[in-house]
Image (tube, rainbow, N blue to C red; front, side, top):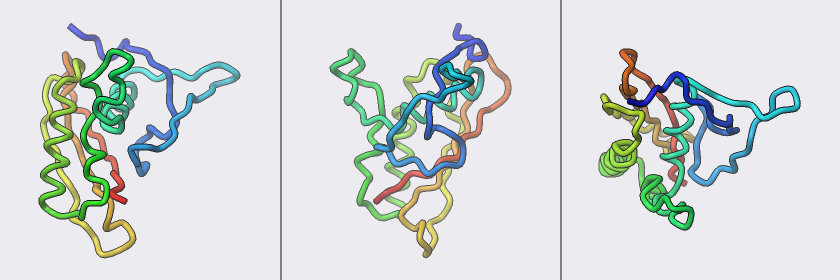
Length: 146
């Protein structure tokens, strides 16, 4: 059994709630009083999910993780329409099904596209049930299609 609450990882920049997350955004380590900052609990799982979704599937093959990541990068340049959102849901589910800390992907939903500057942005809400926890983890992220 995986204990989600006691897992500890390095805290990364550009992996926070409510940020626009292009899949190639530069990620760095966070500092805390002259030391490396860490993240744990649901914040750790949230960060792990974002890392998995924003890493191109196969990109870590040379490090021994050929199946880590997602195929969301294949949607860059596509229109924000029903087909693209359906593919995005498929790619998200495919990627998160192998995350050992997730028991169930409860929901993947998208906001309808707007006519404004963010019409090329997929706004996604994910609800997942972590292993051995009762409370669902809700994540909101924005994926840039340009």
